[in-house]
Image 1: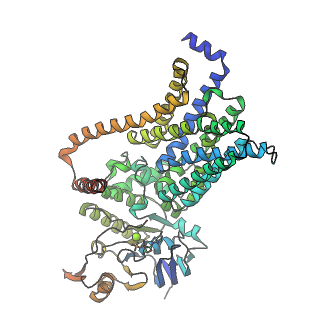
Image 2: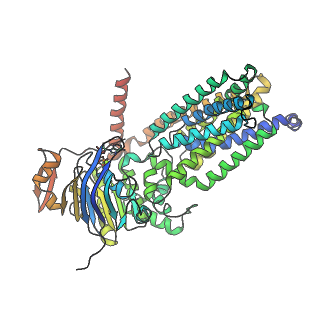
Image 3: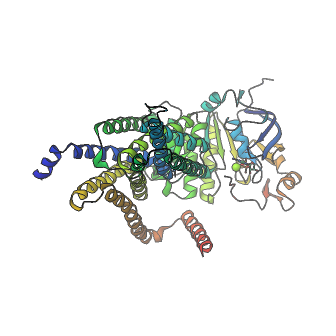
Length: 268
Length: 314
Ligand SMILES: Nc1ncnc2c1ncn2[C@@H]1O[C@H](COP(=O)(O)OP(=O)(O)O)[C@@H](O)[C@H]1O
Ligand SMILES: [Mg+2]
């Protein structure tokens, strides 16, 4: 059997914030590459912390985490060349009057050196990505004027337009309506199928994407479960994380997870 | 018209005042705009007052003979860089509130320091310190113009070169870092170069006017203009207009040009808010019939949030 470099590999990872909050502990797992991976878990379960640590934005207090074989602390430069990242929505400012096109081009221009001029190839890629999420008409529109769902679509387009084999999206479906959700999920699914890329998506709700994802990591400050969507959608596991009111329902051959947890994560 | 040109040609202090007006308008356009984008307008005032503390230190060191070569302007520049670095450090994670607190603390510290040193400075030199607060654009000398000019040039070149990076840092610092940009370096570069320019502008026109000119036109433009470049240009025009009217008025009314310019700059913001309100009302009337569900949702949430805020106030 041929062994390939895993997408993410952690050993006994622990992350503690300066204020003393222990966001992650005893996290050890491995995900093959390429994958369409979902990270799920309730508010404050350390999902964002895990991806930020993987990108070298936060220092682990213990253990290691590697992305495509590169250590997140020592080789963050290599990792960042591979990654296209969409942070959680509350870390994106929406008062600066940038245009939609500036946001989408940002994903490509950030990988260049100053003065980061956009070539016609960059523009074509950006327009194509916007088309994927049905936003091509808003190319010249100011980003702050869009609705929450439209902004998320533009940010997903930023990831689709970029280069690099790993897309990391922190709650791209937060605060979106059904139409935006469907568009985003379809675009990501199509993109994963047609390209040799891995997608790591943090989500509150596995249901919209559970037919697409290959690996699901269930977190509650440590690894509670890891596996295919249907094995994670296990009543016992879900109750352990989301509490006794969570239920799993089966519908046309798929398991759906019902929890009372559908808010948006917010931390300052 | 001929008369005006005649007066300008014959009086070097007016020429210097006009040059300084243009340079300060450039500083407002380059620094003020990005500070307002980052929710850091308070930093302009923090730096301006820190410059005062630094100047007090300079006067003290010179006067006491401890460090005779230490010009007050060196102290002003040093203190303003310290404020920028401290603010930058507090805001490395991109959280605005933390930066505001850092500005507030360094503001208080440098003002206390200035007042403390005043006891050790001969009384006849104390007005020199307060001069930093009031300033007078008609009293500049050639050295002032050269210093102000070179920082303005530095600031303009850096902003032209790195405006994309400054925008990226303002919009999405975390994402920029994760894509491999050294967001931290640009974050500090932006704050420190702005601080230098603000400190020299403070020497030229006084802390109060610097605050008005750095913040109000940028805030006004950001309400109305819908592109980064447009905001920068609008800030330049508003700031220049306010200063020129201030200078002109000072001849007719015998008032401080800074006072007039400051009042005009502040009025520009109030005017912008009014225009925006009228414009929004018109927009709503047009859009009323084609709201998408997504939009409705946002409006509804905003309405609920507003109600909430109102409830708090009463
Ligand atoms: N910047 C921070 N400083 C201190 N504590 C934090 C910070 N960010 C997150 N935390 C804490 O770490 C835990 C995990 O947070 P996070 O990774 O954001 O969770 P999730 O993304 O799953 O909602 C939470 O308890 C949260 O309060
Ligand atoms: Mg999160």
